[in-house]
Every structure is written in C-alpha cells, then in structure tokens.
Length: 324
Image (tube, rainbow, N blue to C red):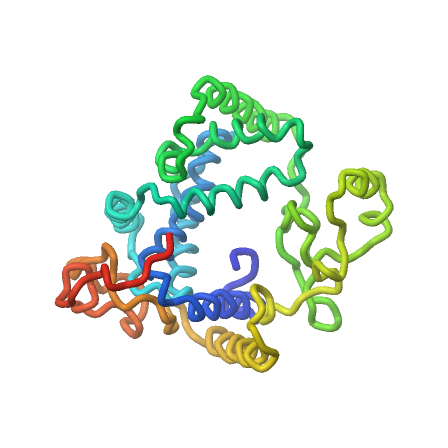
C-alpha cells in the first residue's frame, strides 16, 4: 500500500482488502491500536536509517514520511489521526504508557514470528540467530515479549557497529541503485493476477511464479536438500487477486461476498479526495484519544465523537474484547 500511487486502482484495492480484514475482526481491534501500528511502520525505518544508515534523514524526508502515513492511517479508517508529527508523538507516548505491557499472549506471537524469521537459517545457527534478533530489539519490545532475560548488551554493541559499517559501505562505496528494490508487483499479469518477488515472503515463497531457476537453479537445489519449500501452486505460484488475499472465508459464498465488498470499497476509495475516512468496524471507544485531541486530520465522518473518546461519557473500555 506504500508502493503504488494514491487513488490508483492497485492502491485502492490494497487498502480496501486491509479494511475488509479489519471489518471481519473489528470487535478485537481498536482504532488507536491501528494508528499506533501505523506510527511503527513510519518511525521504525526512520529510527534505523538514522542509527545505522549512511546518513541521517533530513527533516523534510521525515515529514514526507509522516504525511504519507497520515493519509494511509485515515484511509485505514482510523477514527482519529493527528495533524502534525508533534501530535503523533504525543499520542504515541500516551498509548505506550497505557497499553504497552507484557502479556502471555505476546510470547505466543513472538515465538511464531521468531520461528518465521529463522526458518531458512541452518539449524546449527538458529540459537545464535535468535540471540542476534533479541539483541537488536528495542528495550520496550524485549520487555513486552519476555525476552529481557536473554538480552546480551555486548552482542547488541557489536551488531550495531557491524550495521553502521555496512551502512557506511552502502552509502560511500557501492554504486547507486538504478531502480528500487520492489517488494510488491509493479503490475498485474494479463489475467489480472499478481506474482510477488521471491524476497517478499522469505520464509515461504507465497505467490512467486515458478521458473526453471527457482526450481532447478543452484540455490533451489540447495533448498531442496534442506527441505525448504519452493514456488508451487500450493503457495499461489499461479498468482493471486488482491481481493482474495489473506485468510479464506469458510464457504465459497462468503468468500465471494467478501471479495465483492473489497471491489466495491476499492471503487469508492479510488474516487474519494485526500482526507476521506471510510467506515471500518473497529471497537466503538477510544483507548487513549481524548476530547481535547479532536477533530484531528481528515473528514469528521466516521471519526470519534466526544462520547467515544477515552474521557467521554461511556461505561468502560474494559467491555471491549482485547487481542494483544
């Protein structure tokens, strides 16, 4: 959803597909959580580029990323979106102080992500790979995921020096890229389906077209010996339609209905102006957004009302189902 021009058909379909997923599980999802996640996608690259890149980002580059994610957040149906980076930072601090904490469910989630990250690493190197991943995590993330006892500060220092050295090499020694490293397809196949580059989902080759190279090339043969999966129809090698991506619905009828809703929502998003906020069935009440923060960026429609704010007149946010 970042790679395509705003209000293009491809971009609108992508946003509509994400919103359909959030509609399906909306009773577990809070708008404030989605906004905080958008902040992570925005600030994470900024943090690591400034920490280990060839040069820190200029202020205008940081602001450009904020403007992009501000628009993406309102297109995701977030019921409050900040106008300025300062408002975003204030929201982030409030959210993390109130909501970011350890929970047993976090351990289950972290284990799945760790297994995915280490899936293609040789077995004898996985324990060290695990230590490296834990070492570069931010302190608050380590704490929330229960990794603090395994943290090695000396290893973190070494890894940061290595990353900084690699950033310096990339910036000062290597030739500039002639084209970007595209993580999503630039265009659809003639039949309207999409095939992804092989590095989009490194653990499993989802939606990667079968070729002689990725079936019988030297890397493919090595992966066969290691028992790793190769592009295959089981993983969508024939391509996928945007509206059908994600977890399939339980019946053919419900799946087709969901795909039809995505296409209708995409057509609506494509013709709407900047600042348009679609209706997404998030939990009704805010976690941290208060009345003094209203109205925020974007159309007032489908935004928080004063009564829905964290300090509004309602019973309690504890009645909302929570999925950490």
